[in-house]
Image 1 (cartoon, rainbow, N blue to C red):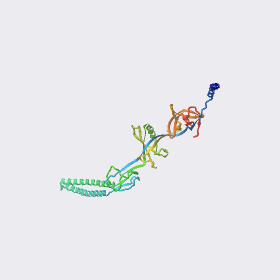
Image 2: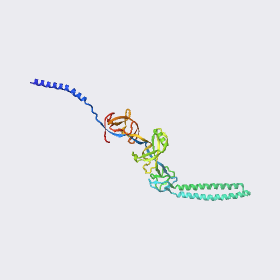
Image 3: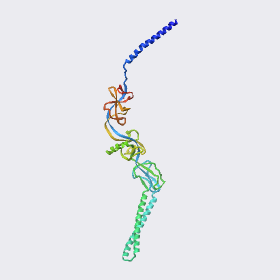
Image 4: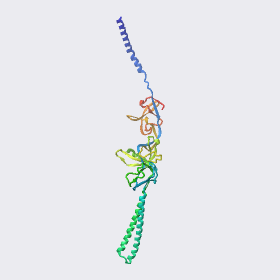
Length: 372
């Protein structure tokens, strides 16, 4: 009985194997005959448009005061008064410091007294010369006496001139007791206090004044840009924008006013300087600023979003959507402005390019345009 059962199991196993060998090839052939259905790739597109695009050069600059003056005393003495506060705006000619003038007033009075005395002596000597001239002509005085009187008169005349110079010098020293602002600007930290003894021409300034209206921004650009900058600067003023943040909407406008006379051989850059009115005082000496020079404007430039341009082994390309399929199109890309890029050739206005989803695309692939 067991032998019969074993025989039946073996028989059905062989029958099942035979069935598989007969029917599986036919199934696989049927599957291979079914056509492959490709799914559309979802993409985002943007139109190719024409737009005016500025040609710009960008750099990082440093804000510098239009002029800086270290205020120092020309004379020594006690500081009697400080006539401003730290950080105060001052105008040209404003009184800043007053040094004790009393010693210099006395020196002026002494010089004036010496001048008055020597002027009287010189007048007396002049009268003596006139009298001795008549006596000498009448041979009533010797030639030596006559020449001595003349020499004395000339010496006193020179003494008077020296006294006049001494008076002017003493008056000038007295004027130096009052120290005025030589430029308009903003004062820095006060480095001396009232009551201090001030040294003449001390190395340490009393205060520093920075002129911040107008103001400079120094920056450097690669030497490759020099020829273009010189060309456009020769035809007119070049507009320069400076911003403390990355947002150029908050920038201030100035003009390029200086190109250095030599390229820095160590860095291969050229130093430039722009001048800004700085009416809103958004620029402050010592700050770093983002700078961009607008050289020219390309009118009716063909542009696409920057993310549409891809780079492959054969160069730059974009995917153009035509009749729900993707066409790979080689392009020559130019300058970038913000989030757009200029296409010099390869595209025409009105065409649609893929801006997102390129990684899943291949030439001729079906596409499904997603909503932006």
